[in-house]
Image (cartoon, rainbow, N blue to C red):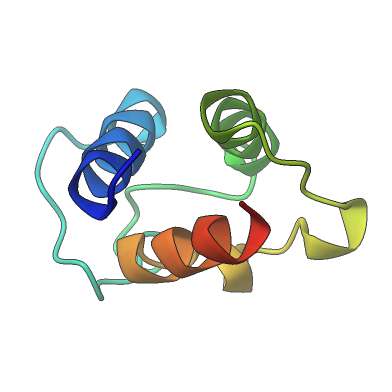
Length: 80
């Protein structure tokens, strides 16, 4: 999967769990904007694990790692 496909897949997954149906900026805080909350984080991370065949350790299950689309993309890239 190339960078463009990865980015599109991450956006698709975030949209599945977002409370708002809009395109966030890559650096926008998904939690501060209210698009995501900590309750959906474990489900979203599970979807990322499945989509990218990665394992997110419990220690990394922190909103800071998944704060924005850019951070999610960087995190996924570091785990692949």
